[in-house]
Length: 157
Image (tube, rainbow, N blue to C red):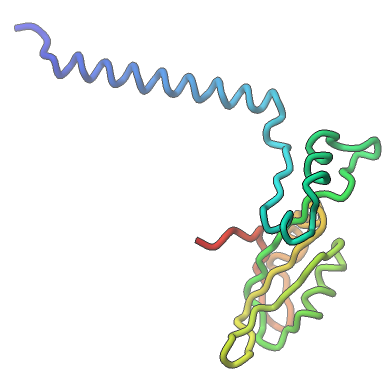
């Protein structure tokens, strides 16, 4: 008895999977060769909120690193800071992160009904490298007897 149609269909599906895998690998190689991972991205809030103008974003993308090895103003990076003691103030949070780099904004999130701290906050650093330094230096450190968690903030869904 000959091979059934199901094994021919199975071989076809396997060939298609292999083709898709090769195509993806080629796209990844091409993106890496073109430097696709280093393009700064600004959020709509950053542009509409006045933190960056569209011209600044375009200039950062077009000009790349300057002669000194740094970008002009950079794209701000927002960090989540968790594990805060309820006594920690926004000012304390700002001062802690200013030891690492330039802070655009800092806020300890409070309960809208009671006004008490919810135990977390957000800090916006002016440069990606400052944000990376803050994560490396402050994450896992102690503030008011509590171990802090610092990571890049993600959009709420």
